[in-house]
Length: 69
Image (cartoon, rainbow, N blue to C red; front, side, top):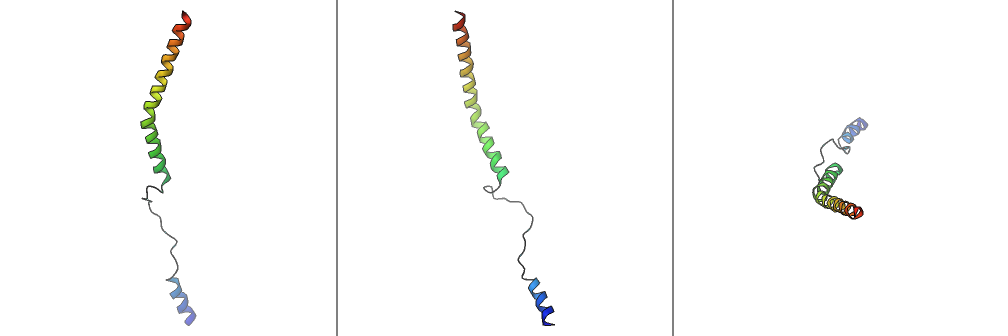
C-alpha cells in the first residue's frame, strides 16, 4: 500500500514540460527582429540608393554628351 501511495504523491511533483504560448520578448523573437531591421534599412536606405542612382544617371548623361562632341 505504501508503494501505491508513494507513486501517486510523486506524480504531483513532476516538473512541467512547459506550455504553448506567445513569446512577447521582442529581443528573443527572430521574425520581429528581422522585420524591424528590414524596415529600417528600407526607410533609411531608400534615400541613399536614390541619390546613388541619380548620380549614376547624371554621369551617364554627361559621358554621353561628351562622347558626341
